[in-house]
Image (cartoon, rainbow, N blue to C red; front, side, top):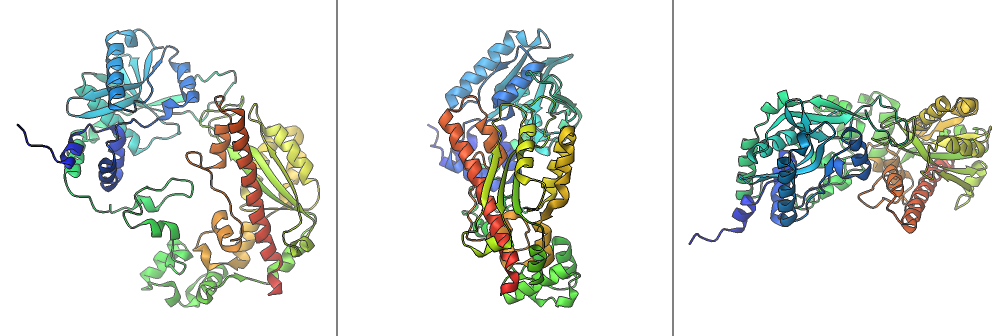
Length: 515
């Protein structure tokens, strides 16, 4: 009788998956932790699993079959058998319109792969990785190499491997016609640089050994504010660093290039740097604010703001860029505004009241057609022809207005007339203010956290964590009317909260000379 296997031996001999490969390649520690927490037999959803994506793939392969991602070992076994049966039928090689989406293969060496697209080519079966992007990534090549290796050891020989990317010049003609939205890139010549057998050995050895140490490159600490952080940050003792970001007096507060210069000169802490060593007024102002541990807002900014024409309006825009366009005449990832929110305040006197007296306006597209004309008309009506429009990082709003003007030539004059009325609060703050709590970041969220801490801007619930993702989700046919209403109300609330932050920041500027 063979000795009973220890738990880590069992974990190390369970099937390895393509999703685990990417985790292991980035962080063996995370792979080890997740294997010890769960067997992880479920296949993660990929781009092909979205209904809209499958509809687009049908334009290339009208007779394509689709296998949903298996969630249990039994479902994996069923999916593998279905894949084998379909391949043995010979249907895949009958013509260009046939393909298998989500084909599942398993090798005797204990590896699994769920392949995005398995189709026929001039020389046999072709294996494709779908990426809803205009360029590929190293992870895509790794996956293709893994898929090819596992498929070969499962008896499925493929003659071509390619990435399917978005064709950026594609213009959607409407009526569901998606032919031409994807372009293929042959990656067969580079797959030989990937040593899949060595990866498998490395993954097994890692699982049999003790918990790996932290990787040299802490990618988990360099996430955008919209990316989901690694769930193991607390275990690794990194959660405090992620939450706090830069220390308020870190050299990097002056910018990475400046930090490198100062470090090369022998400085290790910002407060040891003489003010005269800093090259411009903005950095010197930040240095003084950090030294005093209090915000600095130069009093002269108040008079400059008060002199601006009235009435005052505060504006925020939300946009979406579908990988697969849904409105006729648009391109992949074309930036389309779908929501604006605007507050009207009469002028500086309104800032003396708490809460600030204002009139709120908004427009949120219904999602049933190209929203640009209706949105532009409603925005022109509210912004009028006089007064000042405040925005944060206003280049974004200006560019969207210019794009609307090009798309709607009959409205180009009024839209372009708005541009000189827009004042960028981002530029105003950089020229006159700094708060140590910003920690070197000028993002709207960082500035709000520092200068308007009383305003709470909601974060959307995963997996839809941005306004664009929430809006796209709200347009799904399968949603109930109550779900759509809930999502739209969340978008409108988010717009009101962002405007509340803008009002609070503007108030700080207007009252800067009263301290």
